[in-house]
Image 1 (tube, rainbow, N blue to C red):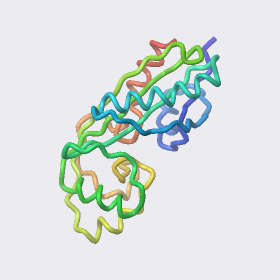
Image 2 (image 1 turned 135 degrees about the vertical axis):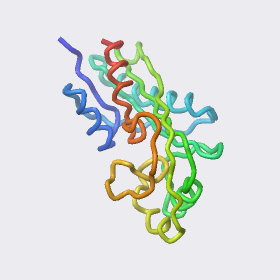
Image 3 (image 1 turned 90 degrees about the horizontal axis):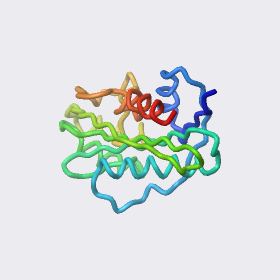
Image 4 (image 1 turned 90 degrees about the vertical axis):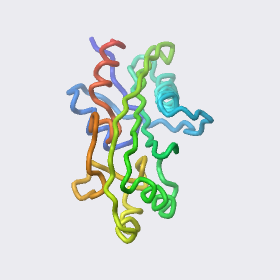
Length: 185
């Protein structure tokens, strides 16, 4: 019998993407701090994904717990979720007309956190150059997403090209998740 699967995230995008695996799961959002002094993007998303998975795994030792974290890197800056409208505008202005990398760390914890495996996926994204008035209007739309944009939104005019897995840019690289879950049992 397979162990229960728990997604340690309240993200509707991650919930939707995880359904692609056709495996039942429950949701227990993690509330760990996302603060870190880590400057390497790949290491940072793995660290945060592991924190999230471990917090929930300690409460549910019978389950496999999936944690994830996504950030954007552009012009040498690590960009998470915007703090407010003006921060979102600053982020979108930086990203406008530029390539950036989207990193998502994924961790699967089991046995109350005594076992954990993790990895990260990276995709490249090119954003359209938008005029300031469009960026201003767009800035409050996705305050809950790293980079302040959402490619899953059909009306999102910002992204022009993606190199890599689209699911990664949305927030959960399903192929990587499948591999980690298989390894975890």
